[in-house]
Image 1: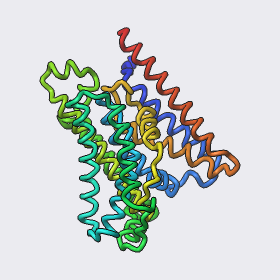
Image 2 (image 1 turned 135 degrees about the vertical axis):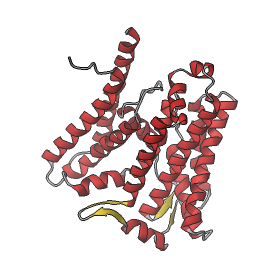
Image 3 (image 1 turned 90 degrees about the vertical axis):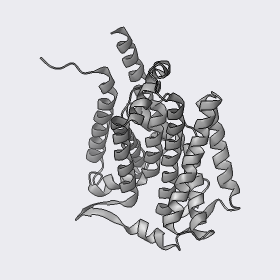
Image 4 (image 1 turned 60 degrees about the vertical axis):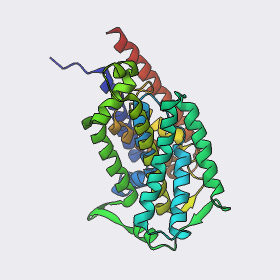
Length: 323
């Protein structure tokens, strides 16, 4: 007798199936797409999005939302560039400073949500405008180059792996972050508490779980991941840029939902977010292979795919409530 598939596993399995089908179809359609170089480029090019989506997964699992991640990436990239060029800090000091700033920014939003019981949507919306505004005010220019700094050449040229199977540093950072996030989500008390809070906050309180503290930590983690994305972007492109990552928060949410995490919270997998990011990456790169395809079609494809997964989530929720 075949074991019965649990409904909560359906979204992540669907995500994996969509990625395999999409990657296979594109590989058959466009020669040269099926290669290690293209796969490593997908990871590297979407590293900042992937890092933001990793933090966003915990936020959505807890039943919240974070609209500030794109602006925090821009702010972090500017801070990184200023630390290296204007304040002449070493990379060993600059990187922790920027990551700490992102963590503190996220923790501040989490504290407002916890202590004043404000809606996460409004708090993080305000945080989005605040972070973007600070990034623009920090300098008269929207862009600060760091191409003359030695760390840029090192970060850009360094690859890790063996023979022809090597990964650039942005991809390594993304994979390390998401691997650590998987362990945290499934094997730590904090991760289990996040699931409990997202599943039923009142029940979590009755069980004596630190609900308020967990909310603050979740948004601090989201800020840390976004700031790391900003550092990766600055070092990978050779500049801090206040105008980058506009609307990236929506792509991050889409990647999390397509990855199988319920928007209502409590159910989801960090591994699914990895596949969600890769799906968006494949869809985004198709116009460059097609040549005559308008890039706006990628937005249409992502929107339709997101709608399908939202409908699937709703169906599974109703099915689960009837059992």
